[in-house]
Image 1 (spheres, rainbow, N blue to C red):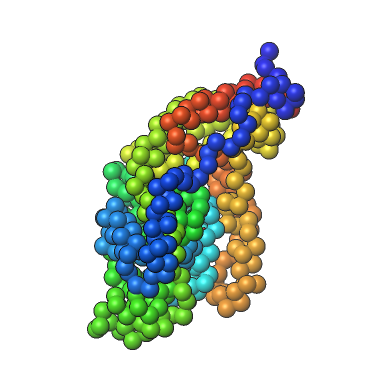
Image 2: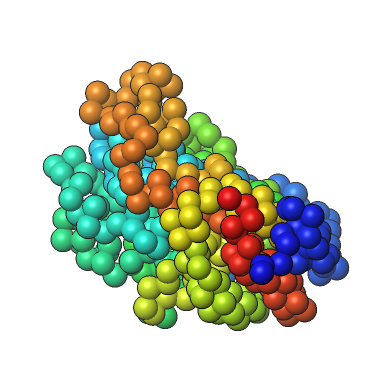
Length: 418
Ligand SMILES: Cc1ncc(COP(=O)(O)O)c(C=O)c1O
């Protein structure tokens, strides 16, 4: 006999019942860093102070020659696309399964997003990427979904063979590595990260891009950082210098207080990753044994950042029990941090991707209009995703055990829910 589920009146498996994953971790050191910055300056016009320190540290960590802070990850991605000088009608192959902001700024840049399905890892399917390459393709963009690195060696070799640029959205993957190399490093043309409030390194809001391509960097600077920063940084003999005072008309600068906070956090990144990886190992091993669930697929040689731990629910192994009912039972057990991610879903489900010409009447006629059902692997991955945080405090080992117990209990008693 299975134990009575909490949803049906039994005792809860998770006893504390409150969210234990509170992000970001704010300490007295964070307060001091932000206050120090507030007394120093709250508006930075050029690449100095905390901006220079953070960008230099970021470039060094990712073995890049240049980094550029922005006010959001969306702005960083937009800056990469404008920096790369994508022309109207240029096609960019992009993941169908990602947070939409990886891809949506392409519409603003006049480029054409061409979506590719994902594979069992949730990342872009390299075979589908290759099949989509055509005469108008100029670039590929990938997201390291939930912190698991995409197949960068294969993607960079495909892009090199076809003369394409490769961009990375590393917003879930601060500190992730493949073959010992950091994501966002040497294998792409440029990479962007969000520093938004839930991200592993955060300033509340903010973003950053890194590249070794000077032209891309200068164009990206001109796109969102007019006057002093452009005047000082764009070389005198560049054809872009004469636009330095106005830039391209937008201002996408980061806030210094946000970056002071992110700078303090950066010092903790390796320690957090160590703890996350330790917990993720336990979670993978234990969840992987449960009927009806698959632990995240991590390719050989990859060390994810574990922004989240995304299980794949297998309803056919539990007599077709809908994921929503399974999830409701988990919540009732007190596993309140188990989430069905809603807004991160196949982009083909969104009106923007189904009817792009409604919002962008000037989009080229070749812009695809997507519909549900076009990306079967992404649809299945998204519909069956159950997301858990990966805790970082060593004392959260007990929470991990209780969450595993909650899943074991619901799997063991699933027949009560049918
Ligand atoms: C994968 C991914 N890309 C881009 C973004 C956009 O970043 P921001 O919210 O900083 O604009 C996010 C934010 O959630 C994200 O998860």
